[in-house]
Image (cartoon, rainbow, N blue to C red; front, side):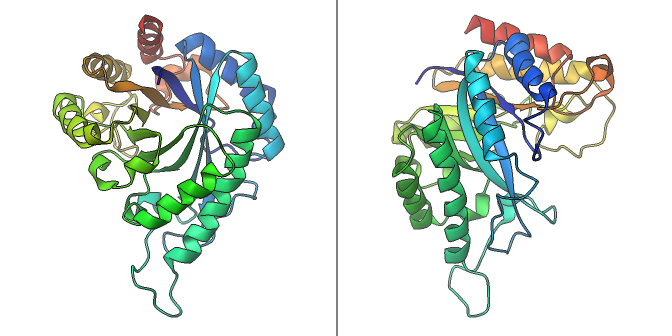
Length: 309
């Protein structure tokens, strides 16, 4: 697998957002400003809570199929390669990692079989779009920690997806959870979220290497990044961390992350987090404390690194 110089795009976009001229301009700027070669278009279906079984991918919280297909084609016209990543959020705010049910079915209680039936329908829908638009990869889930023990259900889902999508399949596990997935042999590419403390990259990379080596599969960080906020480099996964706006903290985080991962030839890229479909005003970048890098010093660090690979 070639090195993935990538960025995640469009997270939490609603119906109509991709149809706005600003969204295409954002995609163009992503390519121009970061020298990315891949874009991971990530969508968020909704279920009511962590213990409900219906995954809704048809509401206004999702861009329409026509919008999505049009944006994929536009990205390709810019020379970008596209990875599709349909994932799910809980409408009540619970993190998707906590989606969970009883391992033994109980009458009148929600069941794994019902959830996987709905989730598989969702994945199949976007697998068909990925096939139709010739996407370079399909990521069939993200950070769904409690579901990962359901080995047979995930294996069946992968078999079903392969019946309609011919490209490589990955699954994005959460930080620290690389060893939690026992079915890595069923996917083509192993990926995880690389939100590791700035001072702990050496330890975490050594740990991950030992876990994934027996599977002999390509690996990349499907997510990685850090808010432009003081202290965030030490807990980059905490988007609610209180702190002052700090451009240098974010800039330094990317420098260290690239330095450390560049020493490991088995780390084959990133889907950096994240590039909005509707960007903030560049003039206001110095007041933005989000993961976004548009107009911030970290943007140049990323561009320089991707240009060197």
